[in-house]
Length: 198
Image (cartoon, rainbow, N blue to C red; front, side):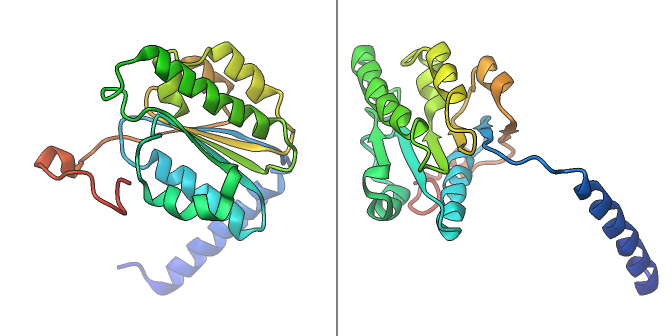
């Protein structure tokens, strides 16, 4: 066990180091954030950012791609708070929807809503949930998506979630987190559960 005085001295040194490091951090502005990977928690983390914005009196907007037919906890709760600033556009799991043209049409509807938010400086954060999946299956052209993201107001943060983020999106992003699958109860026979997966 560490001696208390040794611990105190180490933490004082670490505090001085961190404060010196933070003095050099002066930039602010909208970030493009990507949550990707095979692990659970990408959307959950994105909705956590929405909650943070609400806590600070900021205005978030949400567009959910793919999950259109799902009844989710976040939709039931935040949909009531955000009203028209919460848009759902999709046909459900990609393996349940086998009509590529319908999927493209749903993604286009979702992107029209997203673009309206991305051009409106009143939005502080736009969560584009499962957009990576829509891009993966070519429901939307990546070049148009990147152009719209780049043209957003300078202060506006955007969080894009979903597996298999396109390399072009990763390259454009300011922050990319890859969620790794270490262990998941689905492999042991558990089905998706309310309050955990949806």
